[in-house]
Amino acid sequence: MTYLLAAVLLLSLVTALNLLLTLGVIRRLRTHTAMLAAGGGTVAPPGLIPAGERVGGFTATTVDGEPVSRDVLTGDTVVAFMKPGCPPCEENLPAFLQLAGDTPGGRHRVLAVVAGAAAEAAPMVAQLGPVSQVLLDPEDGPMARAFEVSGYPAYYVIGETGVVRSSAYRPQQIQIAALA
Image (tube, rainbow, N blue to C red; front, side):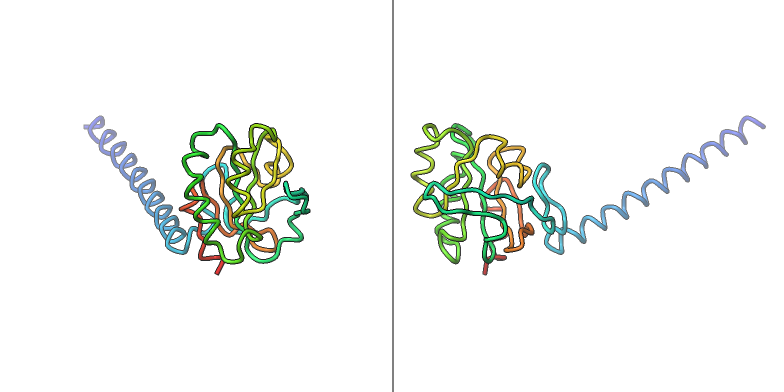
């Protein structure tokens, strides 16, 4: 009889613990559902700066010789990080070219950062030049560090104060509505 009572008590404790853990998971799922319904909140793909965070400071010069920095950007700007020889970058390039061409404000509201040496980046730079300001940045260069880029391609929409409005690994996933 004592063994039966101990077994029932142990089973009751395990059941109560399971119920508490299940309620915790349900509460967490409700929080995530609310964040996603509200436009993502601070949820971002792993390795990208989430919406609402500010990018690091940067100064750079485009291939056309124009200076660019976080502090001189006016309005919302699309920023893309690509790398020659990167299969996902080449696969997403046509979609990005379309997005850049349709961006309100034209090429002055689009920055395309190409990682790598000038010689290997030349074909990509030639394609990007008509629809965006193009920057050459060494891999893990100042632009990549400012945006905490850990993989290519990476796409952002940033506000004029350097606050990320949207980030994604595919150009179709960034929230371009923020640019209107």
